[in-house]
Length: 59
Image 1: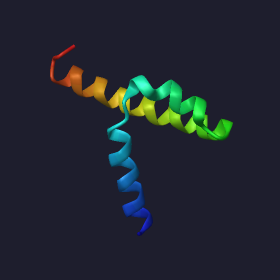
Image 2: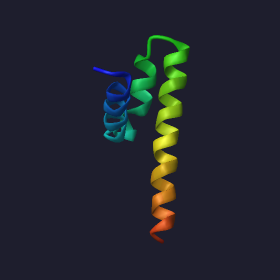
Image 3: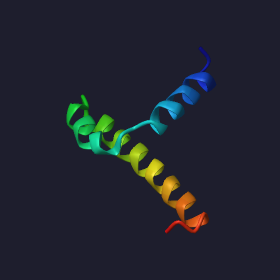
Image 4: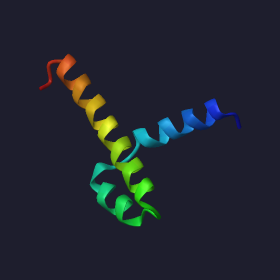
């Protein structure tokens, strides 16, 4: 699998994150870097959902 395909799969996986599970995912992380990565990814996804909601006047 190419890096582009791997990143695409990561993107798709991240889109399915249940944000209620975020704290558990962070607790299970094996390092501080992994915890930071999870926080950054979930923040990014939430910001994008917020941007879309505002653009669609759902906010």
